[in-house]
Every structure is written in structure tokens, then in C-alpha cells.
Length: 337
Image (cartoon, rainbow, N blue to C red; front, side, top):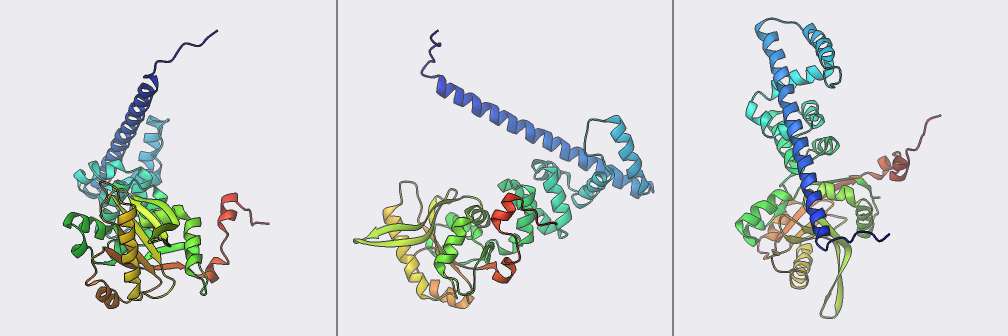
């Protein structure tokens, strides 16, 4: 029996329906998450108020846990431990507008991590805003906190004010870090730049996480032909928010002023060969094992191409030797008796 013919427009219609369903599901999840965050905050605030104003003791939390579980047997989240998190949640976030704004869009596990990992209010708010903006999971948030991202973000030495349009310069300056924490890379003291590059490409997901949101990897040893001669870029990215290519040049030692000239050449070649309509000028990032700030500032002072210079740290090889390999971790290797 022949099948019913599918109209030519059916594929586009189905695609539109799938997108609409996905968006509706996302909105439903966000709405549920917002309601849950607010009721948790409300419960925590009520506990705080009664303990402060009425002198209720700590045991009220145990009693409340039992009563709420009995009233809502299918619901989770009313353990004594979680009720204490609700109290802490209300204590550190007294502003209802923040709770119903930034925090309402974060999973409860992310909010708990903010409570567990941070004490300073300013830092806690910074990471809450970043987690909301970038959609970080709990594990990603914890990694960013442990590597002290808020102290590294926007700290690269660069010349963007003099080489980019004002809006682009501000956005780019906030994007680059110093130092970059490449603690997923094992590089021996005698390692070469190609060894570092290979290690980064092998762990490209980790590298993209450290670089931050918006970086799309285009390739390593990316070939450009200029005047009949081939040149190779260590790493090439495209940044989807800055709308420009980002060339990364890896250096195994300390920053030297001559690195700037080489990067300027690469950026000119990328702009001529790879830029398309709508792209903005390419940006260079030179990653060095170490750098002296004043030397970098002098080297960048009269350069016309936008370049940032940052240091990086890698996992010391003596520590790496006692850690399980990525293969072991992925295989769930049992090292017990």
C-alpha cells in the first residue's frame, strides 16, 4: 500500500513545531524553578523571623521537616538539611528583587553552591550574575569559583582602547583573563609549544570552558598562505558575541616584545583572508608562561592591532603523575582491592 504523500512544506512546519515545543518546555521549567526558589526563600525567611522575633529554637526545623513531609509526601526538598539551606538562602539574600530576578533562574543546586563556596557578598553576587548569564551548571560554577574567576576576568594586558571601537573595546577587555588556569594540561618543564598546543586540543572542551562563553574552535595549526608561503596559527577561534576571529599564539616561556610583531602579522593576514561582511577586526591573544607587566605595556603601546597578553598556569608534571589519567576517569577505573 503506498504511503500518503508528505506535502513539500511539511518539513519546515514540523521544524517550527519542534522549536515551539522546546521553547514552551523551557519556559515551563524556568517558571517552576522561579516558583520553587521563591517558596524556598519564603520558608527560610519565615524560619529566620520566628527564631529571631519569637525565640523559636533550632529544633523547630526538625519538626517542620516532619510536618511538611507528611503534608506533601510526594514532594522532595523538605529535609532538615535543605530547610537549613532555605534559612541560609533567605539570610544572605534579604533583597526579594534579587531572589525573584537573578536567583529565580538558577537551579537550586547552583544556589546551594553559592551558599557553600562563597562568603563575601560582592563575590557571591558576581558569580550569581555570571551563572545566570552563561547558564552554568553547579559543577561549572564550582570550578569557576575554585579558580577565582572573578579575580582573573578582564585582567589581561591589552591595547583595545586604542585599537577597537569603544563598545567593542569594553566588551573585549572584559572577556580576556589573566592568568588562564590550564590545570587540565600536564606539561613537562622541557615541553615545547607544540606539546602545549596538542595537549590543549586534546582537551578542547576544558579549554573552551576556561576561555569562556562565545568561543568557537576553528582549528589548530590553521594554515594561511601569504605571498606563496604558508604560515600556521597555533589556535584559531571565532567569537560569536564579538563577531570576530581570535588568534591564540602559545609561548612556552616568558613574554618577549618580538611576539607582538608576529601576532600583528597574523591578524593582518586573518583580516584579509578570513573576514566576511559583518565581521569585526580580529583580536590576538598571546599566552605566555610568564610576563612582566611593564614590558608588555611598552610592547603594545604603539601597536595598531588589538592584542591581549596573558600568563597561564598548567598542572605540574610531578602532580600529574599521581593522578588518574582522563582515560581511567572516563572508564571508571576501580583502584581498590
